[in-house]
Structures are given as C-alpha cells and as structure tokens.
Length: 68
Image (cartoon, rainbow, N blue to C red; front, side, top):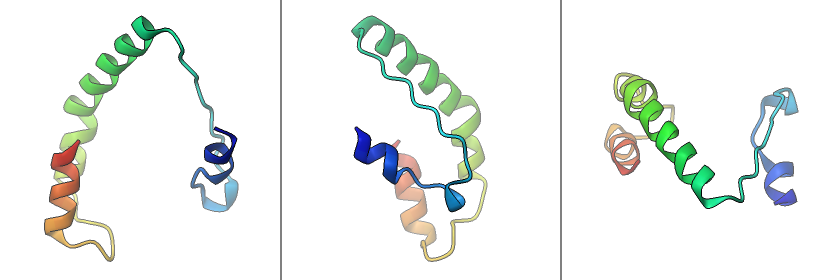
C-alpha cells in the first residue's frame, strides 16, 4: 500500500491525495454502487465526448473507455 501511495501520479506532487481504506464488505459494496452511478452519469459521458490524449489512438481510447 505504501508503494502505491508514494507512486500516485501527481504534477510535481502538488495534489493533495487522500486515501480511504475500506475493510467492511458491505461498505465496499455500497461505495462501489455510488462510484458506478457517478461514472455512468458524469464521468463516462465526459470521457466519451473528448479527444484521446496525445499518443493514444482513438481506437485504443475507445477500448479503454468501454472496458470500464
């Protein structure tokens, strides 16, 4: 876990990352439902309407988006 925390991508380590560790299965399942709803309603449509980042082909960007 500490390795993931140290390697979290940030621009010059300027972002204030916060991590939440969930151990209770019921809480994890509830959070997963909230995340899925947010992704389906806001995040997914946003990414499907923008151009791929530099160095990523439109086909690869579409595959990545559809995999979620």
